Each structure stands twice: as C-alpha cells, then as structure tokens.
Image (cartoon, rainbow, N blue to C red; front, top):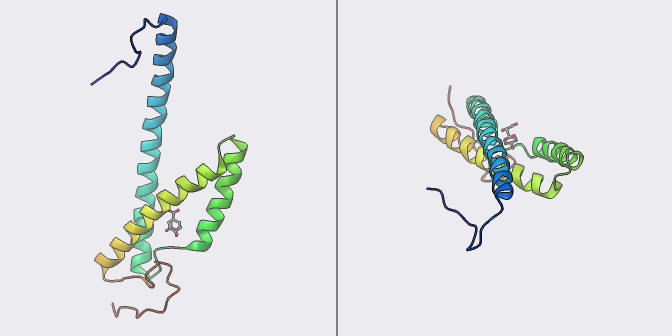
Length: 128
Ligand SMILES: O=C(O)C(=O)C[C@]1(C(=O)O)C=C[C@@H](O)C=C1
C-alpha cells in the first residue's frame, strides 16, 4: 500500500518528482544490498560447512579484527561513518556465527567454547 505523507498542504510537483526520483534510486540500492547480502550469506554458509567438517570454531576474532579495520578505512574514504560500518559488520557477522553454530550442531560438532571462538577447551567429537 502506498501512503502519501505530505500533510494537508499542496506540494510543489517538482518536489514530488525529485522525491520519487530519489526513492527510485533508494529502492535500487536496497535491492542491491539485499542481493549482495544474499551472496555473502551463500559464501558464509559454505564457510560454515567447511568449518564444521574440519572442526574449526565458528568465530575467528582475529579475522574479524582485520575485517573491521579494513571496513572502517573503506568507510572513512567513502565518507560513511566508520562506527556505523563497524556496527553493521558486527551485526552481520553475529548472524553468520549463529548460522555456523547451527551447522556445527547439525553436523555433530559443537565447535569449541560457548563464545564460538574455540578458545575454551572442549571435547572434540569422535567423528571418525
Ligand atoms: O571468515 C570466517 O572465518 C568466517 O566464518 C566468516 C566471518 C564473516 O562473516 O565474515 C564470520 C565469522 C568469523 O568470526 C569471521 C568472519
């Protein structure tokens, strides 16, 4: 459903047109973000299976630190708030780790410590 949010006054048609043009671009960008995220999750699903097969921990904090440092620099160069970029990446990675943990559970490998890093001693499952 479309709703108009113009209040009670008539809006200049040029403004309506410019708003529509900008919203078209926003819709395209949102679609690209969704498609890129879907591709990223396809990759991370494969990483999750690889890690589960080889008893690797779901999370890799050292890798995450490198990703965050890199993304913050990219964000700064792109004039995007680096703190926002970091929060977004952490949000995505938290979801990936949840998927990895689920895959490990389903594969019969709980993958190490409760924080998913494998830093806590845990008994490795006897898979073979
Ligand atoms: O690179 C990995 O090891 C992954 O599991 C992928 C990924 C990511 O989403 O980028 C997720 C979890 C890890 O802690 C680090 C990175």
